[in-house]
Image (cartoon, rainbow, N blue to C red):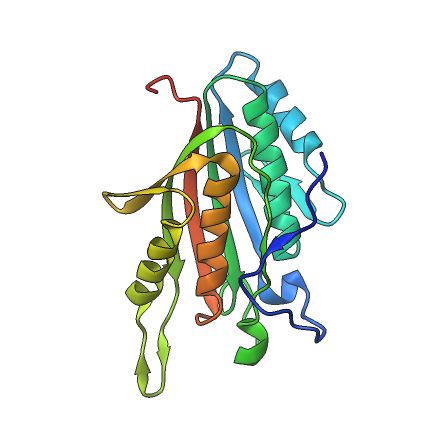
Length: 214
């Protein structure tokens, strides 16, 4: 699969050398659940179809782990989700993204390095109506003289989501409806935007394509 090399200009370019994805704890875990008799083939083919040149990928009996830059991880996820959806039928996918420290890593990097998030990757629309239940977790403990305010960060991300997809509040989550590319982009944009002010941010979304209830 090929990609448009453009990006959404949501953050200034930082020309300084950046720490590695492992240094920053950047990565994803996800699982694909095709509701088809040949689900094993659909999952394996989708993982094979995703661009893996720039990421580390490890699949176990629960989920698939992806490590790389934010851009490479997101593009890998999009490839895999799109390939599984293109197989046809009802697809459910669970995606978890994490970035920053302290989290998986207990880094000593200064704020101006940890909070330097890249632009959101441009994902071309693919004509696949998608719904997602999305949760964002800015793990903001605050600093001396500044209490943590995770809800302000979450509210800003939900408000920004209205620019791209249909947004509906639900119990414990926010529902997003739109093209697969737009829904994933919205999740990623909220994750990276929160990372400009919060050192460790995680986000989770359950995606549904071609639900039999539609």
